[in-house]
Image (cartoon, rainbow, N blue to C red; front, side, top):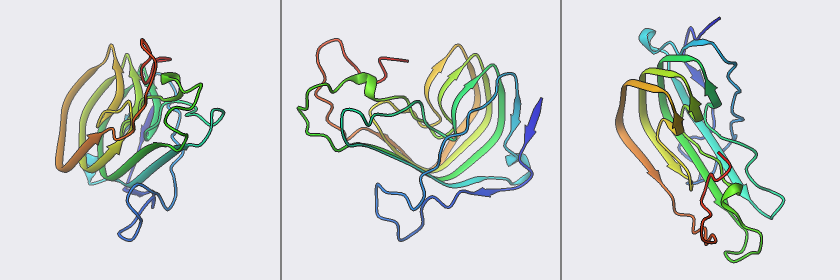
Length: 178
């Protein structure tokens, strides 16, 4: 089936006075059903604005629960005409750096559109003012598998970085469960 946004969506996750690395409201990613055509409406001026996702791992039982982005995962779908304006995704880990039990499996992929995309087609995606700070991240998608991407552009600032010191054991890496 088809899903189409008819206008812009303001998720009100952060504003001009929101402290760096925080959200006024952290967005809970949407689970995209399989075999859907999603039209974000950017051909008609629609945008997804002010999306903020903040994850702070505080102890060994408080880890990421899955991939994060506007959609957590996209599988066997066509996603087109999506324009993101003002995106902030931050994954923090407040545990002591050498805490026992820390694992790459504590971290999942993040991206503005989706954490994970599998067997899908992405067309005409625009990123404007996107800042992502996470151990396993991409601008549009955190982890892309057997998919095609066409006509993806970034305007203004696009920053994807990891400032989190993981100190993982050998043969362990962020996203090991993906």
